[in-house]
Every structure is written in structure tokens, then in C-alpha cells.
Length: 112
Image (spheres, rainbow, N blue to C red):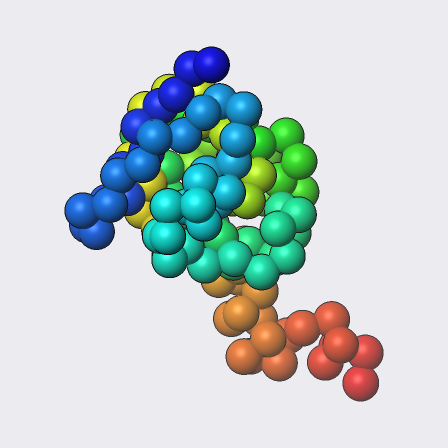
């Protein structure tokens, strides 16, 4: 079973993660405080920017195809190489949704 090193940028935390397990599951086992909520790739709470390396995450439904290249949902992502991840960095689609809601441009507001 191949294992890869996952380093969390700026935290000093590094773990070894098998290609057969998710990054989040190993974080939980190792006691690393990684945010998460749904654990099914939809809420994006567990996202991290991929600074280097590759993951596979076919079930990460909350990300666009372009975002999958640059962000990992740690609840779904399985390393394919050594990685450097920047936790707490969210894909642009989250920011767009938050700004739209703050401006009153959400679909619910448009229906009023």
C-alpha cells in the first residue's frame, strides 16, 4: 500500500496518508483539527488549496472541474503523490455564493 506525505502549509503538521484512505480520515486518526461537516463532498467545509501534488477525488461533487485541479475536499481526496495543502482556503465558487447572498442577489432574493 503506497503512502504519501501530506504537509499542511504554515502549521508544521505533516501526516502519511495511504492512497486508499481520505486525507480527512487520517487527520481524524492523528488528532489534527481539520474542519469538516457533511463528509460526502458537498459542503466544502473541509477544502484546502493544493499548493503541490495530486489527489484523486471523483466524488467531490461540490467542486467544479476547474476547482478540482486546485482544491482538495479532504473528506473525499486521496493522495496520488506527496502533497502540500493550505487548509482553510476555499474555492472561488464559495466566495461567489457568499458575495451574492450579501448583495441580495441570491436566487431566493430574486424571487421576491
